[in-house]
Length: 487
Image (cartoon, rainbow, N blue to C red; front, side, top):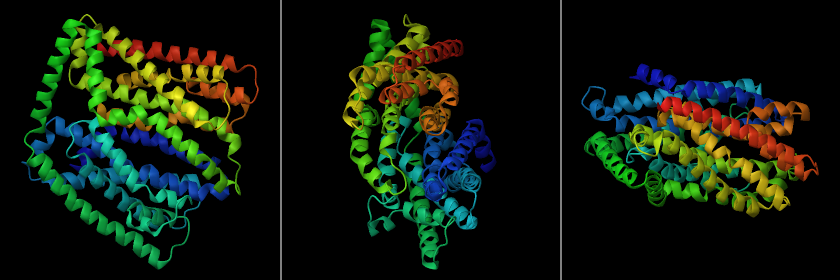
């Protein structure tokens, strides 16, 4: 089972994705000033490679649950114990390798490498088990993600203590605190008490999470009937409703189905409010973070980049959601039904792209008004959002084109922030002529236009025109690719 899991994870793109991310993380850490590099390395290792299993195990479990694989496994000698241990070992291996490479190559000096490896291994196994507990009772990725937001919010509260925003001993009760202690021990000496706390806490937590995961497996999978049949029944019902809607009016039927999804699915409600909530958080938190960082670096000069980052991050949320709709429609056979309806694959594609753009524009524009860190004229604001919102259909079509299923979609989603926010960060470190090479990433242009307008550069509209062209070329290429794949 362990060999099959590693093989499947490689096939789904987990290893390719983390090869790219590891290279990006190493290069990013090398650009951080030496006095900040240790803290940056600790935060990076703890918040990404260490917890990769929490998200990936959810996708794998849901896919195997829907295909009826778990029903078959419970009748074999492997059982729930072997299934869980295989997932823990395979995903923890990837987390340890990625974290070690980031720490050694990105930071440069890791005197306590053994402590860091032990901390990452124990933490990764814990997060895989917690991820299984969180996902066991769900049948779809969208339904799971609202629970993931809640779990992540609670688990990662100690990060506020690490960066100095909140200081309370209560953080030592949460499992991310010992992870921070042990990962930091890779770069700085630990006391015996700190080492005992970190290792002891995570060992006990792994034991508790393992028993909890086995109980969830028995309750929601072994005793929960046949999830594969339930999913097929629900899919047939949804397909039948879709077909009836298509008989009336394909576009109207699809719009009504989407509206029901947005109203019923809590994850989609959270996504709808995501850009505005993030803008409020940034408006409140940015001055506090700037005050704490003032002895080391002045952050206000970078506020235009922060606002530009929000302009492209909001559309990426809607691109991800609509892209997952496309993947689920393909897995459930809905896309095939629309191909044979008057809507056609081309009409389906146009509808999804238009929906993603309208939602992204309507949500991102008020978010940038609310954030208010820098004064932005209406022309610059509307122009930036109008071009940046094109990123939503680009991302949605990229998901539908490049990913074969929702597991590969989640793996592709790990690269999303790199593609969207990478050009924003590169604007800080790359000189002006070299920056133009980033124009291959459409998200670069609206951010560049906003930053140029804030600096008083009269050529900022040219950057928006370049961004419009870049997005339209990406859309045209992806649409053609998507249509060929659908055929």
